[in-house]
Length: 76
Image 1: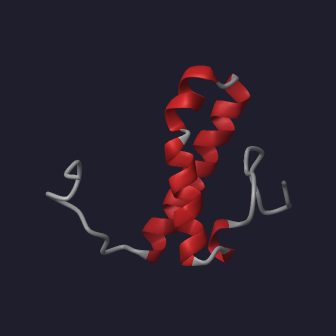
Image 2: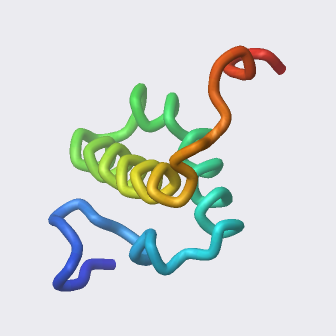
């Protein structure tokens, strides 16, 4: 879905209009499919995947500039 504010690879709802829950849900979905897109998607699909992930991550960082960081990374 494209609109006049979106770039050529933008897909979906404008990130700024998503609720926090929807933003995290979409980010989770993209991160779960990242390796499959990298290994098996067409170039165009991969570019679209990367662009959407970037849009959502930028929005997350805009909303949460003091996000958690440090020792939590990689510790599950």
